[in-house]
Amino acid sequence: NYADKYYLSCSLRTDGSSRFAPKNRWGTFGSVGANWRISQEEFLKDVEWLDNLALKASWGTVGNNGIGNLYAYRTQYAVNNANGEFSVSKVYFGNPDLTWEVSENYNAGVTASLFGGLLTVDFEVYKKYTDKMLYNMPQPPSSGISSIPMNALSMQNIGYDFDVAITPIKTRNALLSIRFTGGHYNNTVLNLPESKK
Image 1: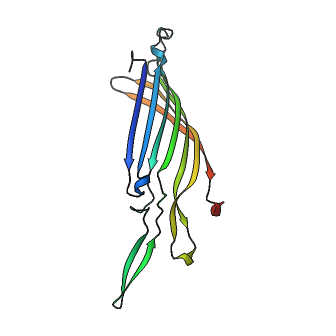
Image 2 (image 1 turned 180 degrees about the horizontal axis):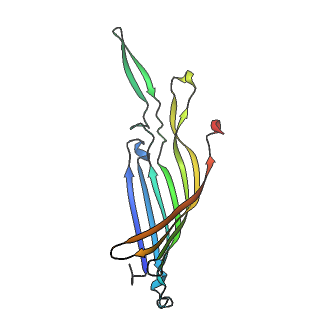
Image 3 (image 1 turned 90 degrees about the vertical axis):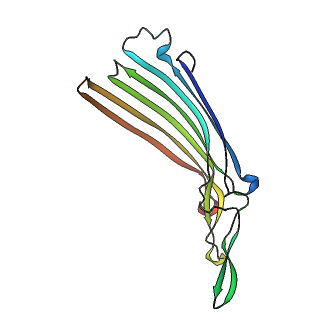
């Protein structure tokens, strides 16, 4: 925070998951966000009806390892005992090339408070791109395996959200606030496994 006008935040993290082989086990994800309180600038300080006006933007990545099996990179077997006879059967077909699903997010918006808090507005647009989506690819029943875990999909989400609040009554003993919220988004699948197109 500098001069109560400029804000910057950053983060960096590294996650590890036993679902992936040692060569793909670790994923590094980061984010950066900024906020500019325009209402604190000299050219807006004398605008009496403007309580607060800020622009904000952020970018970040996040990882997902939700493929189900705790050791999805390993082929797994079960030992069976039928009438005293032991046998080994394959119950899960692992994928050693499996890796983190990664989502990249972009956000930008504006926040405003007007007329002593009578009206507040928050509007934000976003874009999210998800790559290497984790997917259990169905297999032919004759193979004896129902699916194989893969990084097989990619998707894009674009949309906006808004929140508008009007507070016509704000006294020591009474408060009346009317709020409108909404949003719209569009999902687009950019890549599908060949057998699912």
